[in-house]
Image 1 (cartoon, rainbow, N blue to C red):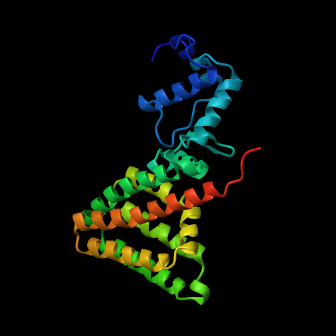
Image 2 (cartoon, helix red, strand yellow):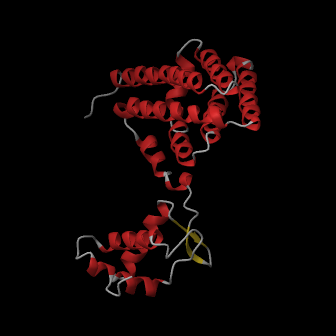
Image 3 (spheres, rainbow, N blue to C red):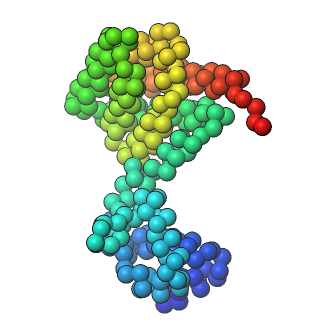
Length: 253
């Protein structure tokens, strides 16, 4: 590593906070810092990066928010495990803060990812995964058979677990993290569908069973087709929901 401060190496092209973020990222990439390692003390980092303490702390806070760094009371700041779920958590912000105009786009991305994820799962799913998926569908059935159709929030939570379990079963943690980020953030649209579309919950369960059957048979093609059809129905419902919301929206003053 050059003895020249990183801020000077970058020739002022970045703010001091950006210099800190880039500098710590480079230290991780070069292997100078790894998962679980403690960051050098502020004084040394400030000298290394050629920045003052204020921007240094801002850069560290930004990396904490991104899941790259974590703090332990009384112990300092450490590099996290850098696992995919943690590093991809900002995707959740995109899904949570989306506007109606982008809902269909997010649903389309979810469909692409989950179709691929279920294809992987069909060749890698374990008997334990299949038992978990079966139990989730039984849980949903029991809830839907309850008074007034059961607790829809509980149904959607179980639905989330069904899709997340499939994504994890494929063995690709990055793909699973992306799927989980999107699946768990479509709550409002799916609740609207459950409340407003007659028979939607029963249809969804039928589609879930078809997906599970394909997984049991280790049939990747059938699993992909079943998942694509299931999520296309959800996607079309989201489009209808967002279109209706826009039609009834109050004009901006």
